[in-house]
Image 1 (tube, rainbow, N blue to C red):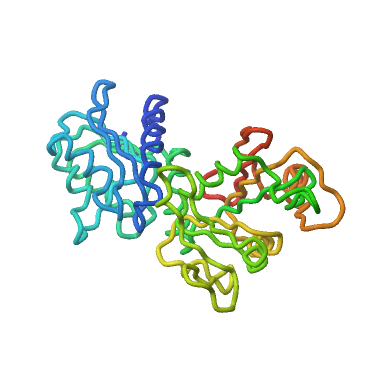
Image 2 (cartoon, rainbow, N blue to C red):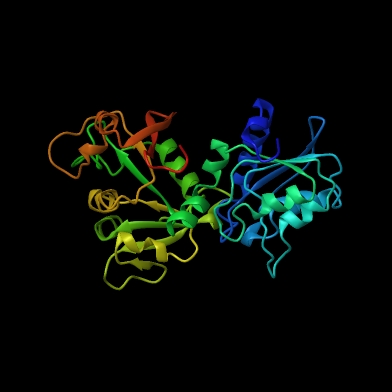
Length: 332
């Protein structure tokens, strides 16, 4: 039945997972538009694929359809986000292009909350005689976290990244070096930075460490995010001032924000309820004693809080990455 989730089966969901993975190639370069993944499939064979290009155009569907010369006769389109229904000076509405393509069916991973589309894309496809099914795919929602958060809450999706000891300390202690975590974990942080539009630290971290906050992985150096400093003072060249955590909505069209830095900045974002995801790089040591610490973010404390859901864990050398989603999260 068109527009029904009941018509979506396990094979459809696997194709949507593939579309979501394809969309990751466009993050964050597709800003100000979300990165979308699209696959045209017929008889189990991928005919064409596309993802949103730099600057937001062309859209994923247009990229893939162009590879087919505009003709997708009898195919099924798997697309992570509802095709857009609004015209733009930079390109036509994808729903209109698809309506003329000869498609048999469209499987949408996530409805678009953008009021310019918000169901209108699906309606246009149905009027053109194309079957449409909406899957509400979790993998697609995850791939669209920035867009969903920006559209519904008028702010970027916020990831709080911290390196912690087993007992919640943020530094290894006096005379024990600068780093809690090893080279592999730190390289992983740079890969995550490459997916961010902006990154913010507090004044204490800025004064103590003079962080570069760039991406230092070969081939990804141009993916360094905008640098923001949580302060009410003037900021150096190359930095922008964030006067208050609640002001992140004014970060232009940023979809993804990473918060790094010390305990004070972390708590500033946590207490205002603005953190959507935690990325905690845990070192296998106990520091003890004094020093900056966030005991509320130990594994035991988070498990008992009921506010956070453990979403992923992975081993990075001697360290462990634990990813938590907030209980209110749009992606659950």
